[in-house]
Length: 490
Ligand code: ADP
Ligand code: GLC
Image 1 (tube, helix red, strand yellow):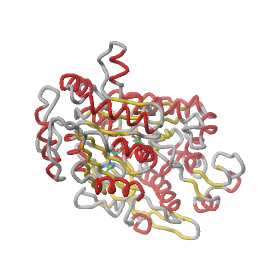
Image 2 (image 1 turned 90 degrees about the vertical axis):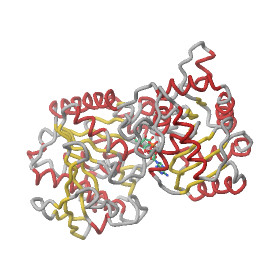
Image 3 (image 1 turned 60 degrees about the vertical axis):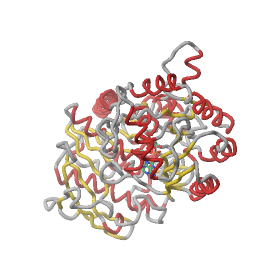
Image 4 (image 1 turned 120 degrees about the vertical axis):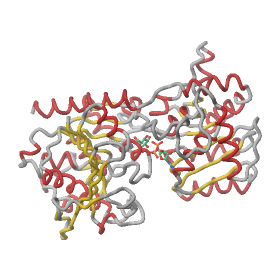
């Protein structure tokens, strides 16, 4: 099966969040299942040609893309995805992609990804490569299904090409004014109230992705159900309802070659479920780096996150007066909205001996923190899948989470289960989005931490679970087959 995997970020090239982890690992798992995969991402300024062995593709040459009044030039660089035979293609257009950040809130954010979408299709044409499925991810690649059915419908190359659209986060929709349809070269008569691209008078990339792709999925089973409701659908619930027979949930897998405490290249002390002793050494190392004292009876709570409301930091703020009283230490890594960065910095200023904060993006530290912390906190308002709680499980770092989306599908509450006589819990969870419940769940974890035997049981329950891609990648193949069948049936 031939799969074109299109994403706006992918590890190891460019990353702001979990989409990059998925785009950097699912294609590898698909290759192991005998798919031929080509990966497409924009060539951001930060992607170093030498570091990743990128070569300019002379055969493809210049791709002119008309956007509004301008004709922009796109070029294609190529590389082999490390450790695989997957060809990675990088769409280069300095005008749009040589910026400080991967995503911007500039006036031409729509243009950047219109160019990306069109250039991917034009690259496939120049390669004369006809994928069975184009797998699009989030709004940044959501126009491809529409383009195939409209602007490129003439091209026989795509006669049997179907599309799968994966929603990693319904909160980011790519909503632009109707003028953007002109920039995108979309036929005027496709835009009218309630059409497949119109959303409250605007042009929605996300809606186009949902309406034009053969099959849609999201990144956990619970989130697939949640987004059909007004509480979680972010306004897209009615549109998703129209396509609910084609909407599925597949839990993200984990790349254990990157995230495994036994082999993690960023750790100074390796450990595993058979011998946990290295974990404490990582904790000591981490605390020392941040100038905090080690005390084996005081748990270290870690947070690694984009600092945005989605992640439940409003709730954290409301609960912080109680949380700060817990006998625990905190190390927080993240960046995003200033108000949250400030909130954590203030906590550090108030309690320098127990709270440390690193504002920024640091991949190495995210690994060391996963290994060194005892507890990992994710009080998300909503969470399509969430990867850090799954990494935490593998690292024996007990997650405390709000029971929503992928968090609900991966974290099993120790307290509720043990009350029912099952000792299979791997973490702590709470349902209501309330500061009291967040506090209670965290306090429960801090208290049970003192009972070393029970704690180890909870740690091992998590460490022995398997969230590798093997199972989920097979489910993607099922969806690909479904998309192919649907396309054929038309
Ligand atoms: P989301 O994609 O919504 O941000 P996920 O839990 O799916 O949430 O994935 C987040 C990914 O980004 C994880 O791999 C996490 O380690 C990483 N990450 C988030 N913030 C930072 C940061 N400040 N520094 C390093 N890695 C980070
Ligand atoms: C999004 C979601 C996150 C998910 C990730 C990868 O960024 O917020 O929950 O894990 O995509 O699918």
